[in-house]
Image (cartoon, rainbow, N blue to C red):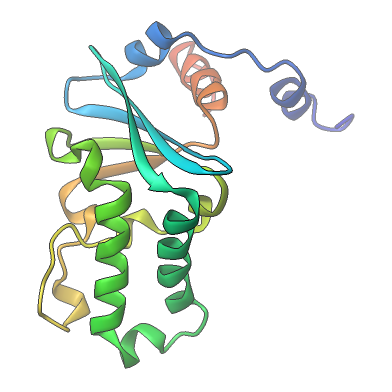
Length: 171
């Protein structure tokens, strides 16, 4: 920490951004910040856009984590997806239905995702947005094909980085 004062400042002087500051950080009406919270019992998504903020209950944390683990299991060996593309597609689409479909992402072209807990390991970009029968994984309707995605570690860090970029600093 002594050798990296900028890191120290980020970790020790955390300023929690106001809701209006987060709304203003959305650059247009087609962008939303999706901040996930995996609690001891329930999982939630806080969706922030330029004009509104909504909280969505996504189900039990245990169910959400089980869905995420089912997808992550396919990334433990290089051939798992190739060997069972139908199972991967089903597991990934189930994750999409649990984490993204309930929040109405079709209204946005750009998403800033701030995952929590186990969700930080989930490759959101690889989640299919539609149920499909195809086993050709190169043709799946992945989230990355329909949305621009960015990731943040926390709303506080994101707000500090945006403010720094706005002042002309390095990102």
